[in-house]
Amino acid sequence: MITCERCKATNLDGGQYCDECGAPLRPNSRSNPAVDASGLNLIKAEPEGQNGSHSPADVPQPEIVGRKSGPALNVSSSAGSTEQAHAKLVIVRGKSVGKQFLLNSAESQIGRWDADGGIFPDVDLDSDDPEAKVSRRHARITFNDGKYLLEDLGSTNGTFINRGKRLLPGTRQPLNDGDEIIVGKTFLRFQIVK
Image: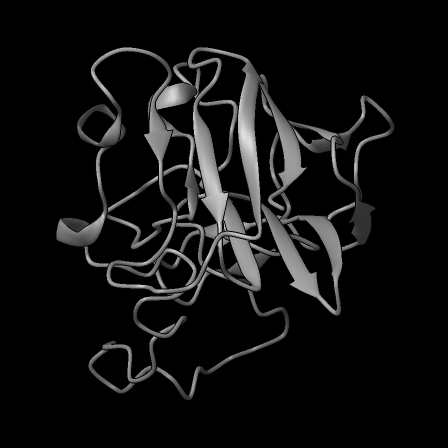
């Protein structure tokens, strides 16, 4: 068993993220240099303004961001970011068909928003996943040297590309324009923005 350093919950061996709070797990680790004696974090897990590490006030709610008619548009860019989107995910099956998430960072996390756990994914499927089949930290898309890779982050219900085999947690798989990504019961279409 692995004990989470953030919330002290016990998790099964081999897990990468805590089942309770979603924090990264460190097997065989007795102390955390990023936590002082009072239990306060000395180092943020992710730099401010990147990969969903916004304060709750900076995270737009999908109902507010969407247009009044037609599919909602959730811009996953950081507040004040000038970077152009290089790809997008479009919900093709699920509660919010047509909803789009723009990807403009080298790394974009897919999951469910959790203010208590400090989890603010770039692709927040919280309002689009009524049965909570998507994990808080479900998957990650990375963009490096013109290539896209998809990685499952130890999700409960798995991540799939083009209805193939379930991705092994921590193993990055190539992602191509037009690929279908399944997370929980939500089907997303990956599209490169040209």
